[in-house]
Image (cartoon, rainbow, N blue to C red; front, top):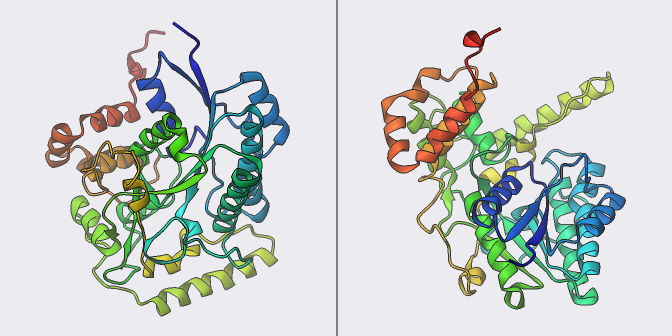
Length: 378
């Protein structure tokens, strides 16, 4: 047997990175050695770390899934979402190996059926997250055109999946409903968005690595085939959890935006008296709750890639997500109002056992599988 291929993944502790690492360790254990160094060993913010580590490992490909959180300050967003990816790309180019970069639909405007080239114009007024993600896309494209960089950019929408340690994006929405902290619906009817299934991302990455001639130097939107109406999703989660909130009352944008402005004013006062306070990241994207954003997948559909799980959607994955996250959040004492007993009710367990048995395994693991402390011999 020849030498295993060696890959380096940055951002392995996140939902996407963890999913990719698990995919390679499960499916390519004998042929691909995937390395996912911790941020303590290799900081994406430190050029010297990247150069030293990649020079030592000599990988056959590099994957970047790292990202600064949505509410990060200017410096963190700039260093993690922009400078880091560029340093990785320069190293990959020097080693003459493929570089797979994960980007975001935050680089696109509101609208429907948005193509890969329909990016926003770079502007100081953009959020730190969107600005830094767009800057990375622009520089990577130039590096491919002028420096011969062999890269592929995968642009994701709202990502859903298990094993996410952060509560943001879809998982923040789910948390707000489960915790009954969303009294009414902060959107308007028929506001659709694209969603990305985290479980499918590794399949596209591996396909891109195997088909470099086809995918090199290009960006691809990667989302589920059908957009999701936000209000329908909220009410479906509410119904599944058998909760009374949120009420089916649609808060108009002017009222929601007025509340956001009031909160911003309060936070400014708190900062002046020395208290550290920030606006919840989701409120920074309040506009998107009221404006549609759906991504075209025509470019990927016309490629050689075939969706490995075409029937999976955010709705079919809800049983698994509900059991996994409610178990985790109860275990961490994050949920204050949701009834613990419903986690093990017959409906949830039977549905999960029939459709997603892995979720029950994950739920048991999350609750703990170590020896019973009270039975340990002293």
